[in-house]
Length: 338
Image 1: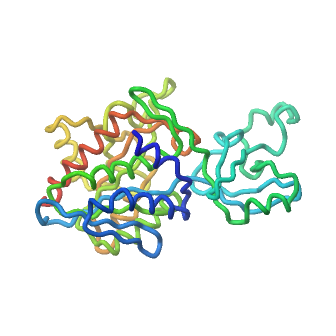
Image 2: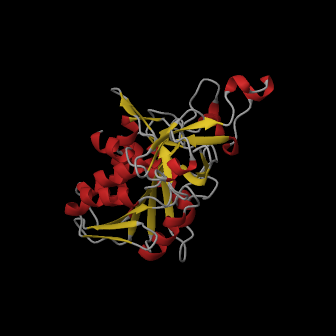
Image 3: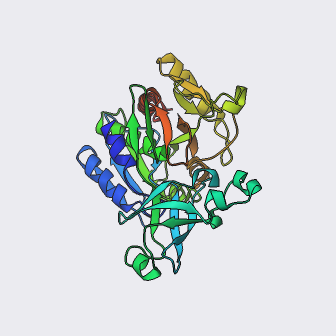
């Protein structure tokens, strides 16, 4: 898991993916035929396989994560911020954050808990009621450390046990990890891999990449919410940790190609790879942009069942990551000549 740990350590909110992209290039440059970065920052990688495919296949994962951007520096040295992507106010207060220049701060409420009225203590704080504190006592002191428009993410913490990994940014460093692992291995057909930008703010990089790559088929690898918790039952659990790769039939941005997702589930079972269907129509991913590009692209989404995404600490099972890598590698052989 050392590679995934390194990937999760990057501060890479939407629009700030450059350093992570440079790291990925160093990882894959000796294993591919070509790579380039487009105007938005997508990293597009072409890898030769054992044969030329009938169908041009694109496999994508996004580099960005949810985060924060500074909108105002107050006289007391505190920072007002806006949220990049979708973060609930319930997971903000008390968390450490780190800026792209490595300045560390903490998200704090405008009032301490013991100063709030009793009924207010039970309310979820809105981001407008929170500040980032970097330890500065004046505006001038803070301006020496950060500027308006600076971006930050949750502070990277990592721990693991035999079965699981806990970290920020598993959405979607899991997908980035899987792409790198596949690129470093042998594949049966020529394939284009895309590390996209700005997924968390509207699937923007994927729209540009799909237009320029112009594939016949695409696979999007992402993380999806696992709500397999005690209070959830049946389809409300969405997907289950430890049950393998999650295959979507519909979400908020895509109604998936039925023949394609049926094929993927069938091939997974035939080859002993753990896979499951996502049981709730919720969320979305880069497939929402990819499948609408040009004249339309047959697209599948394969995700990692991940608890507590878009928070300072998410959880994924190692066996589920392996299932995704195995399944996508298998699908290169299946889809390229479908």
